[in-house]
Image 1: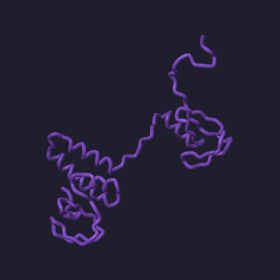
Image 2 (image 1 turned 135 degrees about the vertical axis):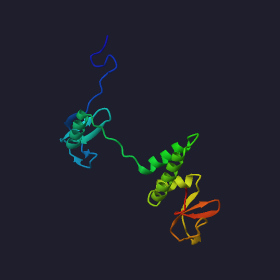
Image 3 (image 1 turned 90 degrees about the horizontal axis):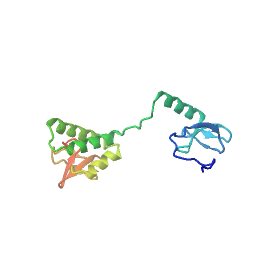
Image 4 (image 1 turned 120 degrees about the vertical axis):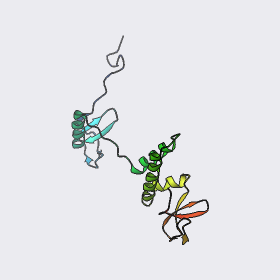
Length: 165
């Protein structure tokens, strides 16, 4: 005998977000303050609450089949591409050229992005650091001033212009 208060089997339907009155005071993801008694959208699956306008926009997007896509970080995508190219058993000249191009791009991003700088610190290409004293580049013999980004490979300092590749 199955009780009328319990389900008799697994449900094939996913509970949809529903419009209801807020029972509590809170904040929406858009930073709007939600007061008690306001119309809100409640998603029972994720247990998240959205203000009326955010929930309405999400409902309209869902009806059209539009989903939000996460932003792709340029640094991470370049690092992933380099790693994938380096795993190839036999690399073509085109792949080698792409690795050099991506590495140079990461080198320029390393001045502002910590993840790009961290890639060079962890990689086999040497340690990237900020110069603390005036020295000379091992490749081009140019002066590397204090505060510039340089690469330290095999006890040699290489300026960021010569760099890798």
